[in-house]
Image (cartoon, rainbow, N blue to C red; front, side, top):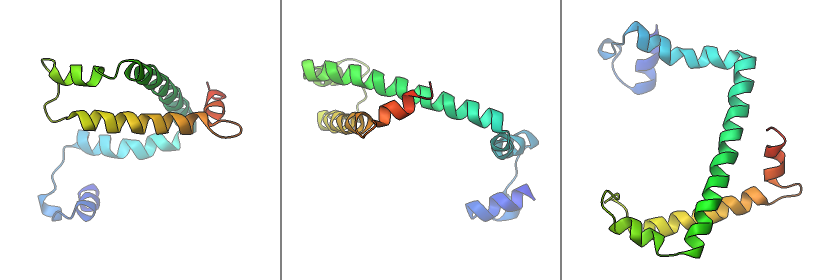
Length: 119
């Protein structure tokens, strides 16, 4: 039954879908986990906490970029930098982060305050 379900949702012929029992269990564990309301609540609150932490970390990094606009160019010129990125990519990401932080800090009450209540 699981292979028929996966075949129907992937477009693959049912006979070509072969999965180990461990893989099947892992795939369908998500649905079971979501019915455990205590675990769901814990996961939800943990994700909110992580989101707040990530946004505040991005705020600090964005402040550094604002103070020193050469950081992106310096990164791109450094050994081990991602070669698939250009300066404009990082600048566009920076602009997007500014907008995310603006939305986070906006509202009445602010979006941030609504999320901080859950910490």
